[in-house]
Length: 221
Image 1 (cartoon, rainbow, N blue to C red):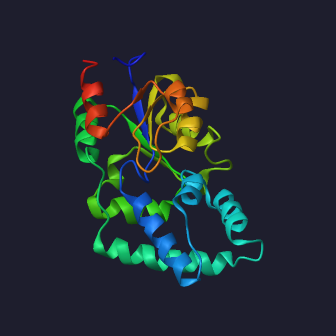
Image 2: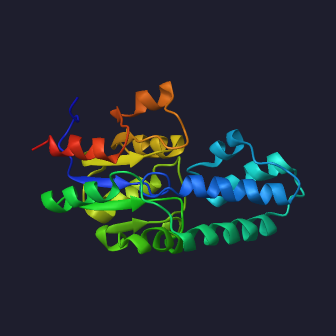
């Protein structure tokens, strides 16, 4: 299967697509919830994947109760996350190879993420990947987060490429919804969320990993 149009730029999500951070955050939430005498079910965590903090906090309050201390929760999550950062967070399969290919064919690329710029530098910096992107659309410059299309529209604008000529790569349902709403060709590379029928409708392809996406791009000539 080929892509419907020639790709002139690629827009990447970060967490769960380029780096294995979703698994790390889930473990941090499980440890924090356990320390509070509670639990963090996978289903509850999955509802938060791809969302900005404000939307995730509503889900946390729904799960733990309206009086839940969000500040204490965030501080403890950050502590556990930093411990894993210090140990090193792995790249997802094919991350370096697809960037090497984009360099070889001179295709611009951006990140559109619900994470902060600080988090991008923490996650990608140790792998020397930050400077391999031409634009970083983090939550710091977004007024509306995923599933709203704004992050992807801002990425296309920053790259100077029409959204319909961009390929968006996502692992989350909310990210796929945002990219598709922006009019981009969208590929889901599943991480902690399985593709649903909705995802198959919104995507031009469900890929097993970034190696598959790289091979697809290479086939464009």
